[in-house]
Amino acid sequence: MIYNIYFNHRQICITDQDKGNDQKSEVEFMICKNTKSFDKVYNEFIINPEIDIINILSPNPDTLFSHLKKKYKTIKAAGGTVINKKGELLIIKRNGIWDLPKGKIEPGETKKQAAIREVQEECGIDDLKIISKIAKTYHTYHFKDQDILKTTHWYKMSYIGNKLPIPQTEEGISEIRWITNREIDQILENTYNNLIKVFEIIQNNRAKEI
Image (tube, rainbow, N blue to C red; front, side, top):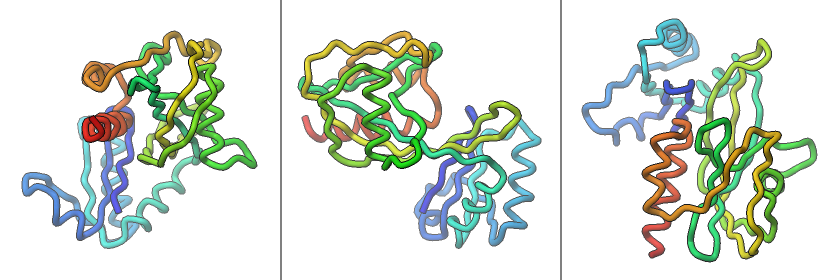
């Protein structure tokens, strides 16, 4: 198991022994066998903004991640990577940054239901079908005096409709575009760090299908 948790442009990676041994030799890992040793590494990361990334090697990554979650208010969200009939990807510009449609899972909703609803609300389109789950991302932020850890579940969707997408401006969305696989590289220059892996998964999957 690997957990990549993003703190804006910074990152903590928690992985297990087997995954750690598969990493390239130049990657340095901090060994944390328990929550006490993890807290020492975590606290140093938080107080020192010059540390961009910490790779933590642990026999129990699930335990360390559960311990990390207790330090935050947790929010679960879901979103969609939508592909149209031309094979193009739907992207949105939110607050000046390229993003994918996503949002908080409401009480009583499944992750899949929330993902479809968020695409419908933020982009004004329907006729959506979930194909598969492609990724799960973690990122933290500060909101109203609270530290938040958001887990977002990402689903690949197909869109067979013909509606022109309409941005949900009240959510800070100013632009919606359909882009080709080759254009994804340009998006990576102005997107959130936790989304780069999602875009790369989309790009690789589309390349295999062509």
